[in-house]
Length: 557
Image (cartoon, rainbow, N blue to C red; front, side):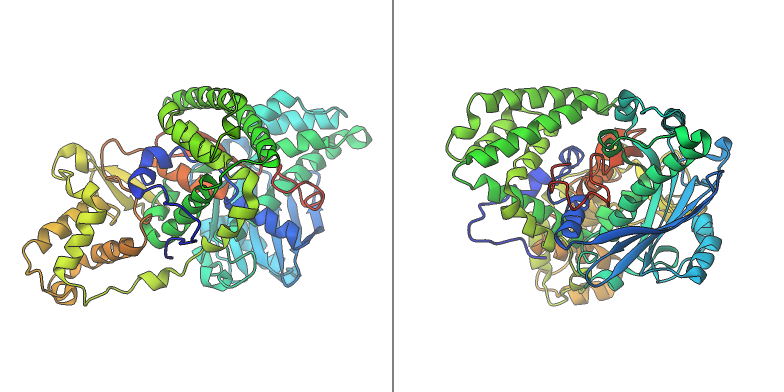
């Protein structure tokens, strides 16, 4: 996708600033996040929702079906509930059993579909699904909060609000697979569809419906235990419960392997920020919305907890940043000329990256009429960028490398610390992993995610060629560089396609890559558990299917 060129849009923040992992790892959800654009679309198209099947016994074992019924299509979440022993519960990808497993079905399933899926979905990777399914997922209970909620509801009492705020979810997914994996429908099946054609909307719909299932199941178990004395969770507490997620290295390579798509996401976001910064003033309604969202952000930061040594100081800095921002706004910052631009310029000097990126998201909130349309530009046909332009000369390609990859050329990739890691795919689970090059075997199976080193090697090889040589002729002799030449050519027209970091450096923090992608999903409460996996919360405060039509649009975020 070409960068957005709306005539009123000022220059976007440059890739040299935006595409660094420290900043990408400070990203926050925004109006453009996929969860929010999905719920807006469902609301605006007046989708209906029901639960035609609930077949769960007194042990919490069985299945249920949740339907999303739109003007043209219906999608159904088929949920399987299991009686999982505590000693088998694990968030690790090597787990073989879960508290619940799910498939998002294209249409309304019949008994044969449910029977087929009941034999496969609980097995996850060991089973197979069909192109009638759009996603495959699983989830585990948050045992401590689950038990507390069941106990309280069974006794006719409400759960403790502090415990709900501290955890934020009753279940957390440990994988949500789609796009052809394990037999699911390929991405191309959804590409032209309304709503589902947007990036990850199928997966986000599945997670939203899983949230409803988690509430229904916990209330079912409370009724089993408490009978007529049992009660339901009151609406204010109910909405505070989202869906947790544990995400590891399996997600990290996505941003590297999909440069054109990454560019589409980043271009849409940066265009939205630039459009708002160009506004000459902030009308009273926009100011009121911004102040309300700022207070919500401060509340979220106050409740946000982490025990990870990287995230703890970031959270402390974010809270301090938001206090400074609130003081700035109280002092009249929104009443000046071009207030949003002025705030962004001030933040670059006064706030940490956490605060700067939180502000970048917050200034979009009052201006949905200006920025929401950009969600339509966040999908792209990646096949358009696959063809290598063989008629380009060596001189022209070297010029692109000099312009777009100056950050890579200056790295000494022979230094031990600069090539300390290697990416590979595990034999057991076929999942991406990160090895220590100088300590562990397996570097001969390295995946091509070392982009900076690859571009450096390409530039070195091109220096030995005549400037007039065609790239087609060069690649006939040096076919090992096809992948790298393609990336450089993609970057020529897609400036946000490349993470401008050495992804095999000893200082690499993969969680920064995870957070960037998860923020585009709409995640909150990032809680790293190591440098390689993170827990998050999805749909906290969001409407449920039965109140989507009545809750104010986007207020929940």
